[in-house]
Image (cartoon, rainbow, N blue to C red; front, top):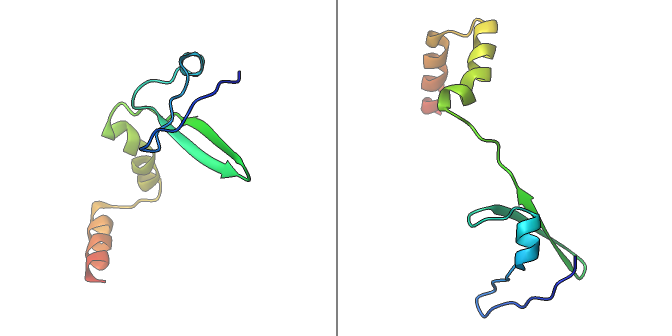
Length: 84
């Protein structure tokens, strides 16, 4: 799909509605913008949805259990980091 758009005085670019609908772009979506020679490329970023902090940290808790990493080990590591 090819469309023509222009840059506003603030550097803003309107993405035509046909492309926004096709790409399911909505207000607040994130885009990566890169350039190459005389071209600009935009790619939609879809961040993983995390239900909770507990779910997000589960792999780390599991790894800590497998390695026998204790709360005392964590406290010691924090103290050493703060001392630096």
